[in-house]
Length: 436
Image (cartoon, rainbow, N blue to C red; front, side):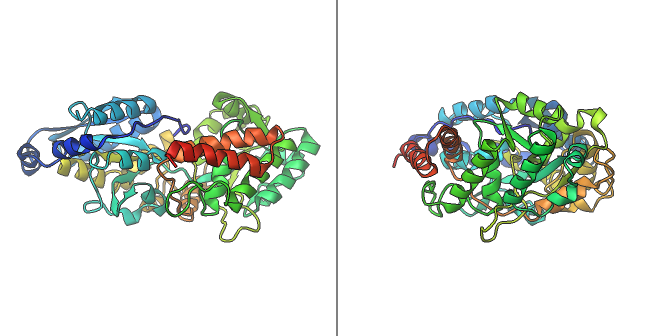
Protein backbone atom coordinates (compact mmCIF):
# COMPACT_ATOMS: atom_id res chain seq x y z
CA UNK A 1 0.00 0.00 0.00
CA UNK A 2 1.70 3.18 -1.10
CA UNK A 3 -0.66 5.93 -0.12
CA UNK A 4 -4.34 6.78 0.05
CA UNK A 5 -5.48 7.95 -3.36
CA UNK A 6 -8.54 10.09 -3.74
CA UNK A 7 -11.33 9.21 -6.14
CA UNK A 8 -14.92 10.36 -6.24
CA UNK A 9 -17.73 7.85 -6.32
CA UNK A 10 -20.87 8.30 -8.40
CA UNK A 11 -24.25 8.03 -6.73
CA UNK A 12 -26.33 4.99 -7.60
CA UNK A 13 -29.92 5.31 -8.79
CA UNK A 14 -32.78 3.34 -7.30
CA UNK A 15 -33.69 1.75 -10.60
CA UNK A 16 -30.12 0.57 -11.00
CA UNK A 17 -30.22 -1.28 -7.70
CA UNK A 18 -33.20 -3.38 -8.73
CA UNK A 19 -31.55 -4.43 -12.00
CA UNK A 20 -28.27 -5.07 -10.24
CA UNK A 21 -29.97 -7.23 -7.65
CA UNK A 22 -31.30 -9.45 -10.45
CA UNK A 23 -27.93 -9.70 -12.18
CA UNK A 24 -26.22 -10.58 -8.91
CA UNK A 25 -28.55 -13.40 -7.96
CA UNK A 26 -27.58 -17.06 -8.07
CA UNK A 27 -28.29 -18.56 -11.50
CA UNK A 28 -28.33 -22.20 -12.51
CA UNK A 29 -25.01 -21.64 -14.28
CA UNK A 30 -23.50 -20.28 -11.08
CA UNK A 31 -24.72 -23.20 -9.01
CA UNK A 32 -23.51 -25.81 -11.49
CA UNK A 33 -20.03 -24.31 -11.54
CA UNK A 34 -19.81 -24.68 -7.79
CA UNK A 35 -21.15 -28.24 -7.76
CA UNK A 36 -18.58 -29.75 -10.16
CA UNK A 37 -15.23 -29.91 -8.33
CA UNK A 38 -13.33 -30.99 -11.47
CA UNK A 39 -14.66 -28.38 -13.85
CA UNK A 40 -11.97 -25.93 -15.01
CA UNK A 41 -12.51 -22.63 -13.25
CA UNK A 42 -10.84 -19.28 -13.83
CA UNK A 43 -11.06 -16.58 -11.19
CA UNK A 44 -10.22 -13.11 -12.47
CA UNK A 45 -8.73 -10.69 -9.96
CA UNK A 46 -8.19 -6.95 -10.26
CA UNK A 47 -5.47 -5.38 -8.12
CA UNK A 48 -2.44 -3.11 -8.41
CA UNK A 49 1.30 -2.98 -7.59
CA UNK A 50 3.45 -5.71 -9.15
CA UNK A 51 5.81 -6.09 -6.19
CA UNK A 52 3.17 -6.05 -3.47
CA UNK A 53 -0.49 -6.91 -4.10
CA UNK A 54 -0.06 -8.67 -7.43
CA UNK A 55 2.88 -10.67 -6.11
CA UNK A 56 0.84 -11.71 -3.07
CA UNK A 57 -2.15 -12.76 -5.18
CA UNK A 58 -0.01 -14.77 -7.61
CA UNK A 59 1.66 -16.53 -4.67
CA UNK A 60 -1.76 -17.33 -3.20
CA UNK A 61 -2.83 -18.76 -6.59
CA UNK A 62 0.20 -21.08 -6.68
CA UNK A 63 -0.49 -22.38 -3.18
CA UNK A 64 -4.18 -22.97 -3.86
CA UNK A 65 -3.55 -24.71 -7.18
CA UNK A 66 -1.64 -27.55 -5.52
CA UNK A 67 -4.85 -28.94 -4.05
CA UNK A 68 -7.15 -27.45 -6.67
CA UNK A 69 -5.46 -28.01 -10.04
CA UNK A 70 -8.64 -27.14 -11.92
CA UNK A 71 -8.61 -23.54 -10.60
CA UNK A 72 -6.64 -20.84 -12.39
CA UNK A 73 -6.32 -17.32 -11.02
CA UNK A 74 -5.96 -14.63 -13.67
CA UNK A 75 -4.53 -11.47 -12.11
CA UNK A 76 -5.13 -8.31 -14.12
CA UNK A 77 -3.01 -5.35 -13.12
CA UNK A 78 -5.43 -2.50 -12.50
CA UNK A 79 -4.27 0.73 -10.82
CA UNK A 80 -6.53 1.70 -7.93
CA UNK A 81 -7.92 4.83 -9.59
CA UNK A 82 -8.73 2.86 -12.75
CA UNK A 83 -10.23 0.01 -10.77
CA UNK A 84 -12.55 2.34 -8.88
CA UNK A 85 -13.64 4.13 -12.04
CA UNK A 86 -14.31 0.88 -13.91
CA UNK A 87 -16.30 -0.39 -10.95
CA UNK A 88 -18.45 2.75 -10.84
CA UNK A 89 -19.00 2.76 -14.60
CA UNK A 90 -20.11 -0.88 -14.75
CA UNK A 91 -22.33 -0.81 -11.68
CA UNK A 92 -23.95 2.51 -12.59
CA UNK A 93 -24.77 1.11 -16.03
CA UNK A 94 -26.09 -2.14 -14.50
CA UNK A 95 -23.62 -4.07 -16.65
CA UNK A 96 -21.47 -6.44 -14.59
CA UNK A 97 -20.29 -8.52 -17.55
CA UNK A 98 -16.85 -6.91 -17.61
CA UNK A 99 -16.22 -7.11 -13.86
CA UNK A 100 -13.84 -9.67 -12.29
CA UNK A 101 -14.58 -12.26 -9.62
CA UNK A 102 -12.40 -10.64 -6.94
CA UNK A 103 -11.18 -7.09 -6.44
CA UNK A 104 -8.79 -5.38 -4.06
CA UNK A 105 -10.28 -2.26 -2.51
CA UNK A 106 -8.80 0.54 -0.44
CA UNK A 107 -10.21 0.20 3.08
CA UNK A 108 -11.28 3.84 3.13
CA UNK A 109 -13.47 3.30 0.06
CA UNK A 110 -15.31 0.17 1.18
CA UNK A 111 -18.16 1.83 3.07
CA UNK A 112 -19.00 4.25 0.28
CA UNK A 113 -18.98 1.51 -2.35
CA UNK A 114 -21.18 -0.65 -0.12
CA UNK A 115 -23.60 2.19 0.45
CA UNK A 116 -23.87 3.06 -3.24
CA UNK A 117 -23.92 -0.53 -4.51
CA UNK A 118 -25.16 -2.79 -1.70
CA UNK A 119 -26.00 -5.70 -4.01
CA UNK A 120 -22.68 -5.71 -5.85
CA UNK A 121 -20.62 -7.73 -3.34
CA UNK A 122 -20.94 -11.13 -1.68
CA UNK A 123 -21.10 -11.46 2.11
CA UNK A 124 -18.28 -13.71 3.34
CA UNK A 125 -18.83 -14.22 7.06
CA UNK A 126 -20.51 -17.59 6.58
CA UNK A 127 -17.42 -19.14 4.94
CA UNK A 128 -14.46 -17.27 6.42
CA UNK A 129 -13.44 -17.01 10.07
CA UNK A 130 -12.90 -13.28 10.40
CA UNK A 131 -12.29 -13.53 14.15
CA UNK A 132 -8.69 -14.47 13.32
CA UNK A 133 -8.01 -11.04 11.82
CA UNK A 134 -7.19 -7.78 13.56
CA UNK A 135 -10.68 -6.51 14.30
CA UNK A 136 -10.04 -2.91 13.24
CA UNK A 137 -9.56 -4.28 9.70
CA UNK A 138 -12.64 -6.48 9.84
CA UNK A 139 -14.82 -3.51 10.76
CA UNK A 140 -14.04 -1.73 7.50
CA UNK A 141 -15.89 -4.45 5.58
CA UNK A 142 -18.96 -4.61 7.81
CA UNK A 143 -22.16 -3.28 6.29
CA UNK A 144 -25.66 -3.64 7.72
CA UNK A 145 -24.67 -6.54 9.95
CA UNK A 146 -22.73 -8.57 7.36
CA UNK A 147 -19.03 -8.93 6.53
CA UNK A 148 -17.93 -8.45 2.93
CA UNK A 149 -14.14 -8.23 2.94
CA UNK A 150 -11.10 -10.37 3.67
CA UNK A 151 -8.47 -8.07 5.20
CA UNK A 152 -5.08 -8.02 3.54
CA UNK A 153 -2.16 -5.70 4.21
CA UNK A 154 -1.48 -4.27 7.60
CA UNK A 155 -1.73 -0.50 7.99
CA UNK A 156 -0.66 -0.44 11.65
CA UNK A 157 1.32 2.72 12.26
CA UNK A 158 4.88 2.83 13.52
CA UNK A 159 7.27 5.57 14.53
CA UNK A 160 10.30 5.00 12.29
CA UNK A 161 13.37 6.57 13.90
CA UNK A 162 16.81 7.47 12.50
CA UNK A 163 18.91 6.40 15.46
CA UNK A 164 22.06 8.24 14.32
CA UNK A 165 20.25 11.60 14.12
CA UNK A 166 18.57 11.01 17.49
CA UNK A 167 21.93 10.19 19.05
CA UNK A 168 23.29 13.50 17.78
CA UNK A 169 20.37 15.16 19.56
CA UNK A 170 21.00 13.23 22.80
CA UNK A 171 18.00 10.91 22.39
CA UNK A 172 17.43 7.15 22.10
CA UNK A 173 14.64 5.16 20.39
CA UNK A 174 13.25 3.98 23.71
CA UNK A 175 12.59 7.63 24.63
CA UNK A 176 9.84 7.59 22.01
CA UNK A 177 7.98 4.46 23.09
CA UNK A 178 4.58 4.91 24.78
CA UNK A 179 4.75 8.70 24.68
CA UNK A 180 2.22 11.46 23.96
CA UNK A 181 2.22 13.74 20.94
CA UNK A 182 2.99 16.58 23.30
CA UNK A 183 6.18 14.78 24.41
CA UNK A 184 6.99 14.05 20.77
CA UNK A 185 6.69 17.78 20.07
CA UNK A 186 9.15 18.60 22.85
CA UNK A 187 11.63 16.01 21.59
CA UNK A 188 11.24 17.59 18.17
CA UNK A 189 12.31 20.96 19.54
CA UNK A 190 15.40 19.28 20.98
CA UNK A 191 16.23 17.61 17.67
CA UNK A 192 15.73 20.88 15.80
CA UNK A 193 17.93 22.83 18.20
CA UNK A 194 20.80 20.34 18.21
CA UNK A 195 20.79 19.07 14.63
CA UNK A 196 18.89 21.66 12.60
CA UNK A 197 16.62 18.91 11.29
CA UNK A 198 12.88 18.46 11.58
CA UNK A 199 11.77 15.48 13.62
CA UNK A 200 9.00 14.52 11.20
CA UNK A 201 7.51 15.43 7.83
CA UNK A 202 4.15 15.18 6.07
CA UNK A 203 2.59 16.24 2.78
CA UNK A 204 1.27 19.73 3.43
CA UNK A 205 -2.26 19.43 2.06
CA UNK A 206 -2.99 15.96 3.40
CA UNK A 207 -3.96 15.55 7.08
CA UNK A 208 -2.51 12.04 7.50
CA UNK A 209 -1.04 12.92 10.89
CA UNK A 210 -4.40 14.16 12.20
CA UNK A 211 -6.15 10.99 11.00
CA UNK A 212 -3.55 8.89 12.85
CA UNK A 213 -4.15 10.92 16.01
CA UNK A 214 -7.92 10.51 15.76
CA UNK A 215 -7.90 6.75 15.29
CA UNK A 216 -5.48 6.23 18.16
CA UNK A 217 -8.09 7.98 20.33
CA UNK A 218 -10.93 5.87 18.91
CA UNK A 219 -12.53 8.98 17.39
CA UNK A 220 -13.37 10.08 13.86
CA UNK A 221 -14.98 12.92 11.93
CA UNK A 222 -18.57 11.68 12.14
CA UNK A 223 -20.99 11.02 14.96
CA UNK A 224 -22.68 7.69 15.70
CA UNK A 225 -25.39 8.48 13.15
CA UNK A 226 -22.90 9.18 10.38
CA UNK A 227 -23.33 12.95 10.40
CA UNK A 228 -20.21 15.13 10.08
CA UNK A 229 -18.80 16.18 13.43
CA UNK A 230 -15.97 18.62 12.89
CA UNK A 231 -17.10 21.46 15.16
CA UNK A 232 -18.26 19.68 18.33
CA UNK A 233 -15.27 17.37 18.36
CA UNK A 234 -12.70 18.29 21.02
CA UNK A 235 -10.39 15.44 20.04
CA UNK A 236 -10.25 16.66 16.45
CA UNK A 237 -9.65 20.22 17.64
CA UNK A 238 -6.80 19.04 19.88
CA UNK A 239 -5.27 16.98 17.06
CA UNK A 240 -5.41 19.93 14.68
CA UNK A 241 -3.74 22.18 17.27
CA UNK A 242 -0.94 19.73 18.05
CA UNK A 243 -0.23 19.18 14.36
CA UNK A 244 -0.35 22.89 13.49
CA UNK A 245 1.92 23.77 16.40
CA UNK A 246 4.51 21.22 15.30
CA UNK A 247 4.58 22.80 11.85
CA UNK A 248 4.84 26.34 13.25
CA UNK A 249 7.77 25.30 15.49
CA UNK A 250 9.66 23.59 12.68
CA UNK A 251 9.27 20.19 14.33
CA UNK A 252 7.21 18.99 11.36
CA UNK A 253 8.46 19.69 7.85
CA UNK A 254 5.68 20.37 5.35
CA UNK A 255 6.49 19.04 1.87
CA UNK A 256 4.71 19.45 -1.45
CA UNK A 257 3.87 15.89 -2.49
CA UNK A 258 4.44 12.20 -1.86
CA UNK A 259 7.77 12.05 -3.68
CA UNK A 260 9.06 14.94 -1.60
CA UNK A 261 7.82 13.17 1.53
CA UNK A 262 9.79 10.02 0.73
CA UNK A 263 12.81 12.13 -0.17
CA UNK A 264 12.67 13.96 3.18
CA UNK A 265 12.89 10.58 4.94
CA UNK A 266 15.53 9.06 2.71
CA UNK A 267 17.84 12.08 2.72
CA UNK A 268 17.64 12.64 6.47
CA UNK A 269 15.85 16.00 6.40
CA UNK A 270 13.41 14.44 8.86
CA UNK A 271 14.66 12.28 11.72
CA UNK A 272 11.53 10.13 11.85
CA UNK A 273 8.37 9.11 10.04
CA UNK A 274 5.02 8.10 11.48
CA UNK A 275 2.92 6.24 8.98
CA UNK A 276 1.56 2.82 8.08
CA UNK A 277 4.00 -0.05 8.37
CA UNK A 278 3.95 -0.39 4.58
CA UNK A 279 6.46 2.50 4.61
CA UNK A 280 9.14 -0.08 5.42
CA UNK A 281 9.75 -0.70 1.72
CA UNK A 282 10.53 2.96 1.01
CA UNK A 283 12.81 3.23 4.04
CA UNK A 284 14.74 0.06 3.27
CA UNK A 285 15.37 1.25 -0.29
CA UNK A 286 18.33 3.19 1.12
CA UNK A 287 20.63 0.24 1.75
CA UNK A 288 23.43 2.49 3.03
CA UNK A 289 21.22 3.34 6.03
CA UNK A 290 21.05 -0.27 7.24
CA UNK A 291 21.38 -0.44 11.00
CA UNK A 292 20.43 3.22 11.45
CA UNK A 293 16.69 2.72 11.92
CA UNK A 294 14.41 1.50 14.69
CA UNK A 295 10.66 1.40 15.23
CA UNK A 296 8.49 2.06 18.26
CA UNK A 297 4.75 2.51 18.64
CA UNK A 298 2.76 5.67 17.86
CA UNK A 299 2.34 8.73 20.08
CA UNK A 300 -1.08 9.27 21.65
CA UNK A 301 -2.89 12.51 22.42
CA UNK A 302 -2.38 13.51 26.04
CA UNK A 303 -5.36 14.14 28.31
CA UNK A 304 -7.71 12.27 25.95
CA UNK A 305 -9.62 9.45 27.59
CA UNK A 306 -8.98 6.01 26.09
CA UNK A 307 -6.27 7.25 23.70
CA UNK A 308 -3.66 4.55 23.01
CA UNK A 309 -0.26 4.30 21.33
CA UNK A 310 -1.58 2.43 18.31
CA UNK A 311 -3.24 3.57 15.10
CA UNK A 312 -3.72 2.77 11.43
CA UNK A 313 -2.95 4.43 8.12
CA UNK A 314 -3.97 2.95 4.79
CA UNK A 315 -4.51 -0.68 3.86
CA UNK A 316 -6.75 -2.68 1.55
CA UNK A 317 -8.97 -5.78 1.52
CA UNK A 318 -10.25 -8.42 -0.91
CA UNK A 319 -13.92 -8.47 -1.95
CA UNK A 320 -15.85 -10.93 -4.10
CA UNK A 321 -18.15 -9.47 -6.71
CA UNK A 322 -21.73 -10.76 -6.64
CA UNK A 323 -21.65 -11.29 -10.39
CA UNK A 324 -19.07 -14.10 -10.12
CA UNK A 325 -20.08 -17.37 -11.72
CA UNK A 326 -18.08 -19.30 -9.12
CA UNK A 327 -18.92 -17.84 -5.71
CA UNK A 328 -18.11 -20.98 -3.71
CA UNK A 329 -14.74 -21.37 -5.42
CA UNK A 330 -13.90 -17.71 -4.88
CA UNK A 331 -14.78 -17.93 -1.19
CA UNK A 332 -12.83 -21.16 -0.76
CA UNK A 333 -9.81 -19.64 -2.48
CA UNK A 334 -9.70 -16.63 -0.14
CA UNK A 335 -10.46 -18.81 2.88
CA UNK A 336 -7.55 -21.17 2.24
CA UNK A 337 -5.02 -18.51 1.32
CA UNK A 338 -5.39 -15.00 2.72
CA UNK A 339 -7.58 -16.28 5.57
CA UNK A 340 -5.84 -19.56 6.23
CA UNK A 341 -2.29 -20.00 4.96
CA UNK A 342 0.79 -19.30 7.07
CA UNK A 343 2.86 -20.38 4.10
CA UNK A 344 1.44 -17.52 2.05
CA UNK A 345 2.36 -14.86 4.57
CA UNK A 346 5.74 -16.46 5.28
CA UNK A 347 6.52 -16.32 1.55
CA UNK A 348 5.45 -12.78 0.79
CA UNK A 349 6.85 -11.13 3.92
CA UNK A 350 10.61 -11.21 3.18
CA UNK A 351 10.19 -10.20 -0.46
CA UNK A 352 7.44 -7.59 -0.35
CA UNK A 353 7.17 -6.61 3.31
CA UNK A 354 3.44 -7.44 3.21
CA UNK A 355 2.65 -7.79 6.90
CA UNK A 356 -0.46 -9.77 7.75
CA UNK A 357 -3.52 -8.72 9.67
CA UNK A 358 -4.33 -12.45 9.88
CA UNK A 359 -3.18 -12.94 13.46
CA UNK A 360 -2.01 -16.61 13.25
CA UNK A 361 0.72 -15.45 10.86
CA UNK A 362 2.47 -13.78 13.80
CA UNK A 363 3.14 -17.22 15.26
CA UNK A 364 5.44 -18.04 12.35
CA UNK A 365 9.19 -18.12 12.83
CA UNK A 366 9.53 -15.86 9.79
CA UNK A 367 7.79 -13.03 11.65
CA UNK A 368 10.12 -13.57 14.58
CA UNK A 369 13.27 -13.06 12.53
CA UNK A 370 15.35 -9.98 13.41
CA UNK A 371 15.77 -7.29 10.76
CA UNK A 372 19.38 -6.28 10.23
CA UNK A 373 18.26 -3.07 8.56
CA UNK A 374 16.49 -2.13 11.79
CA UNK A 375 19.43 -2.99 14.00
CA UNK A 376 18.38 -6.59 14.66
CA UNK A 377 14.94 -5.59 15.94
CA UNK A 378 12.12 -8.09 15.41
CA UNK A 379 10.02 -5.48 13.69
CA UNK A 380 7.47 -7.79 12.06
CA UNK A 381 6.29 -9.44 15.25
CA UNK A 382 6.25 -6.00 16.88
CA UNK A 383 4.02 -4.60 14.14
CA UNK A 384 1.56 -7.49 14.33
CA UNK A 385 1.34 -6.92 18.07
CA UNK A 386 0.60 -3.24 17.40
CA UNK A 387 -2.25 -4.17 15.08
CA UNK A 388 -4.03 -6.09 17.86
CA UNK A 389 -4.47 -2.86 19.84
CA UNK A 390 -5.71 -0.42 17.19
CA UNK A 391 -9.04 1.17 18.15
CA UNK A 392 -12.03 0.56 15.90
CA UNK A 393 -13.48 3.54 14.08
CA UNK A 394 -16.11 3.82 11.36
CA UNK A 395 -14.68 5.80 8.45
CA UNK A 396 -18.13 6.52 7.10
CA UNK A 397 -19.44 7.00 3.59
CA UNK A 398 -18.04 10.52 3.16
CA UNK A 399 -14.62 9.86 4.69
CA UNK A 400 -12.67 11.33 1.78
CA UNK A 401 -14.74 14.50 1.71
CA UNK A 402 -14.28 15.08 5.45
CA UNK A 403 -10.58 14.28 5.27
CA UNK A 404 -10.05 16.78 2.45
CA UNK A 405 -12.02 19.43 4.33
CA UNK A 406 -9.77 19.03 7.38
CA UNK A 407 -6.72 19.35 5.14
CA UNK A 408 -8.04 22.67 3.80
CA UNK A 409 -8.81 23.79 7.35
CA UNK A 410 -5.23 23.16 8.47
CA UNK A 411 -3.89 25.19 5.55
CA UNK A 412 -6.10 28.11 6.60
CA UNK A 413 -5.08 27.77 10.25
CA UNK A 414 -1.42 28.04 9.25
CA UNK A 415 -2.32 31.24 7.41
CA UNK A 416 -3.90 32.74 10.52
CA UNK A 417 -7.51 31.53 10.65
CA UNK A 418 -8.58 30.37 14.12
CA UNK A 419 -9.09 26.65 14.64
CA UNK A 420 -12.83 26.98 15.48
CA UNK A 421 -13.49 29.14 12.42
CA UNK A 422 -11.55 26.85 10.08
CA UNK A 423 -13.33 23.74 11.35
CA UNK A 424 -16.69 25.51 11.17
CA UNK A 425 -16.14 26.20 7.48
CA UNK A 426 -14.99 22.60 6.96
CA UNK A 427 -18.17 21.37 8.64
CA UNK A 428 -20.32 23.45 6.28
CA UNK A 429 -18.46 22.15 3.23
CA UNK A 430 -18.92 18.51 4.23
CA UNK A 431 -22.58 19.05 5.11
CA UNK A 432 -23.14 20.60 1.67
CA UNK A 433 -21.55 17.60 -0.05
CA UNK A 434 -23.66 15.24 2.02
CA UNK A 435 -26.84 17.12 1.15
CA UNK A 436 -27.63 18.54 4.60
